[in-house]
Image: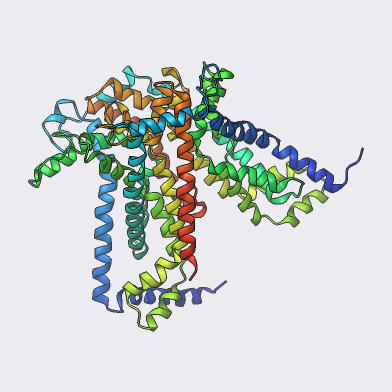
Length: 301
Length: 301
C-alpha cells in the first residue's frame, strides 16, 4: 500500500496525465473536448429520460389536456390513478409479481449458490458430464421449451388456481447462468478455510452456509437483484401460463389493460407508471450496486 | 458403516446437487427432447399427445413461406432485419457513449443511471410509452416535428416505418447494458499503453483504432452474440406496439416468436408452432457459430 504522500503525488500525476492524454496538453482544447463530451452526453441523456417524464406527466393530466397540447399539465390531478386502481386489478397484479419474483429469486439464490459451490469445491465422479449438461442448456432458447412446459403444466394442473404461481415460476427456479457465475466466484474462497472448518467437525452443509456463502455475498446480491428484475419483467411465459385475470403478473395485466382502454392514453400512461415506477425506485436506491454488479458479472437481467 | 473422507465428499456433493439435477433433467432436458418430438406431431397440448406426422409441419411451413404475403416469410425476414438494424446501432451508440463517459468525472453516475433506467423497465410499459410518443397528431414526437416545421410521420402506423421505429425502441431499451459493459472494459485498459503510443506520436484517432478497439474486441464479441440472440427472440415490444398485437401493419413487424405465439396459443396449431421454434433454435445456433468463427479469427493479433 502507498503512503498518503505517495498517493498525493500519484494523484497529481494522474490528473496531469489526464490533462495531457486526450487533449494534447493544451488547456483550452481540454475545455472544449470536455464541454462537447458533456453536451453530447446531455443530449443523449435527455433522449433516455424524456419518455419516462412524458409518461408521468401524461398520467397526471386530465383527458382534455391531451388533445390541446401542452407539455406540462395545467391542472395536475391524481384522478387517473384512482380510476385505474378502481377499475383494474393492479393491487392483485403487484402481489402476483412479488410472489413469483420472490419464489424464483429465493430458490435461485439458494440452489445456484449451492450447486456453484459444489462444482467448484468438490471432486466427484460424473462432475464433467454434469457440468457440460448444465452448460448445454444455455444453448436452448426458452421459446423452444414453452410448448413442452405448457403441456407439462396442463398435465400436472399447474395452470389452474393457486398452482399458477408455481406454474409461472418453475422454469426459472434454478438457472444455469447463475450456477456458472457462482462457481467462478467460489474460486476466491480458500480451500484451507473450508478444511479448517472440517477439522473442527462442522458438517458440509454448515461449511457452505456459514463459511463459504457469506464470503461471496456481493455476488449473491448481484444474482438476486438481476433475477428479481428479470422475473418481475418476464412476459412471454406468464402470458401463456396465467389463464385468469387474478393471476396475471404486472406486465401481462398491463398488456391486457391496454386492450380495454384503447385510446385513453392518460389511463394507459397511468397504468404504465404504476407498473414501472416501483422498480425504477428500487433501481435508483440500489443503482451503484446494480451497475457495479452488471460490470462485474456481465449478467443479462 | 463408515465412509472414507473422499466417499463422504462424494455423497455430500450428490446431496447438494440432487434438486438441481432433477430440475435440469425434468425442466430443461426432457422438454428440449419433447420440443423436437412436438414438431413432428399434430400436437394437442391439452391431451399431451398427438399423432406422428413426420415432416408435415415443416412442409406446411415451407408451403406457407411460398405463398404471397406469407406470415412465415415475413417473420423470418423481419427477425433478421431487426438484428441487422438493431445490433450494429446498439453497439456503435453504446461504444460512443461509453467513450464519452470515460472522459468525464463529474455527473458520470447521473448519466449512467439515465442510460440504464430503460433496461430495468418492463418491455410492455416501454412499448406503451413509445406508442404514445409515436402517436399521430397528439404524440410528443409529431408535436415536436410540427414545432420545427417538419411533416408528421406515421411511425408504427406505416408498413415502411414500423420496423425501424420498433427497432429504435429496442435499442433505446437495451443500450444501457452495453454502455456499462463497454465502460468497464475501457476502464480496464492500462493507461501506459496510451502514453507509450503517444510518445511514438500517435494521434487520438490512431489511439482509438490501434489500442482501444482491439483491446475491446472480446467485449464486442460478447455484446454482439448476446445482442443478436436477444433481437432474434424479440416478442414483447412487437406484440405490444403493433395493432392488435398481430405484427402489422401488413405483417411488417411480425417476428418468429410472435408467429410461434399466434400459431400455438391463438390458433392452437402446436405442432406447427413447435416446428417454428425448432427452426428458430437452428437459426440462433447458426448465427452464433458464424459470429464466433468470424470474430475469433480477428482476435489473433
